[in-house]
Image 1: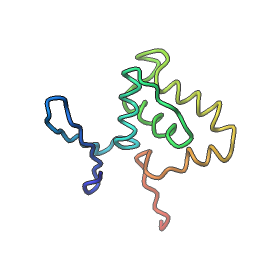
Image 2: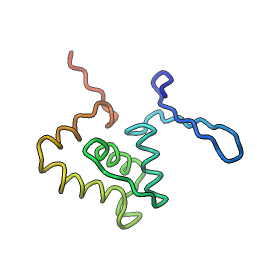
Image 3: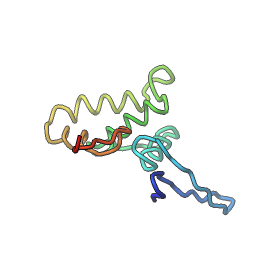
Length: 110
């Protein structure tokens, strides 16, 4: 959901209460955060041309790098990008053309 410029995700806990988490500057938004969190808990996260760039940015943002753990999200995303995506122009276009995932908004009028 969106509320102004902030992306939000609602979470219902086992205690029955509902909590709202606000992602004001998280790369890729709440869906990407959810995938990164699942990765932390050992849930298999499928990398695709559509989600690999946001997940790579999120991994950097969350410091999910070699400095903290081997076989981390940053390393897996890098490997997928270099071995599967960037070798194919069509897949690379998909991965790198998602607007706003890098915290950069491009203005074509300037």
